Length: 81
Image (cartoon, rainbow, N blue to C red; front, side):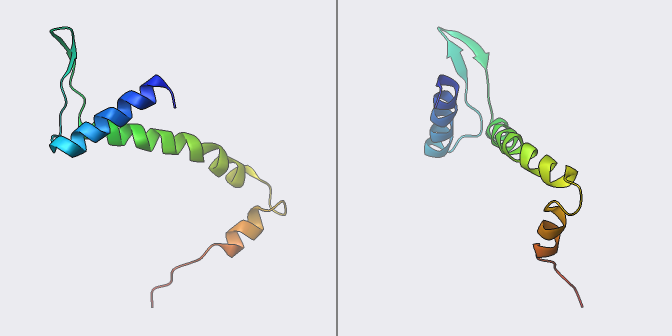
């Protein structure tokens, strides 16, 4: 975990503990930003997309017969009747 992850984790804990949706960030006595809960969610979703991107790209680009067909055949399907 790096410093940025620590800061994000601290912000998340503060949002939860205080029940606020915005968190003023000060540098000395000067306001330098106001991250929101939505900013935190966007960061989490970006990390998730970064993790899943290479996996999804591999499955989608694989030629049939090299595992992609078997993966798609094994995927559950939902049918409405």
